[in-house]
Image (cartoon, protein in one colour):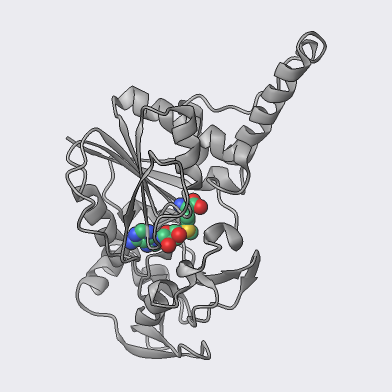
Length: 311
Ligand SMILES: C[S@@+](CC[C@H](N)C(=O)[O-])C[C@H]1O[C@@H](n2cnc3c(N)ncnc32)[C@H](O)[C@@H]1O
């Protein structure tokens, strides 16, 4: 876990690269401007319904979604939280530099009437990985940071063991199966939520719930758009799916449902509009295809949204 943390957030960590996440993989917020814009509109709708006036993007990459929100609603106070210094952004957008991983900056606190949105943050918060050995004992997987070679270490104990018993019980595991222990993510999430005096925190990630834990483990690497071996040497992203149901939450929805409730739908515009108002037709067609991408089965639509209110 230390190697994972160091390779992403250390002095020469992967996420300190100038290119930022967008240089290596695309997400809902930065992959295509039309998709980011539609997501921003949905988040503004959510803020409107909840009566919120501040938008905090946790783990905001290079501020791509913040720019969208700011452009659509210049009166909304926008703040980005990232491990790098502020990139060139519209001057009204605030910025807090963070240590990274499960650690948050002290200045991120006392947020009122705020939506905190964390898109694909928790999957890059390092977590211990354990494997069931031939004797049925769950042991921590230890990784050699330069080669990626693995060996099994001590049996999982303490709060990590409790977490496994509660959220990822061993009864259905076979020797060789893996458990990605979500305790660090849960704690990081609770810490983030505790910074919100009033408002809503939403974690969005690819993940699973107790009825669909992935037996072989999901740890993987990404570099320049390609999936690569997860070697913790700072050369690639290291990510593992998130046990979303173990996060403190009021509601857990898949992205398709969450966005539909916020008015996002992939309905194509009527053909007649193409003749009467070609520009409006093209605009609505582009919105419909962005909506389809955001809600697709087997794609972004399967992401999970955990909602946690603070009052
Ligand atoms: C997978 S990327 C997602 C970026 C962006 N949210 C998006 O949707 O494209 C995760 C980002 O979280 C950032 N991150 C990780 N831990 C953080 C922390 N404790 N504070 C701020 N940013 C963090 C990383 O530096 C990285 O840019």
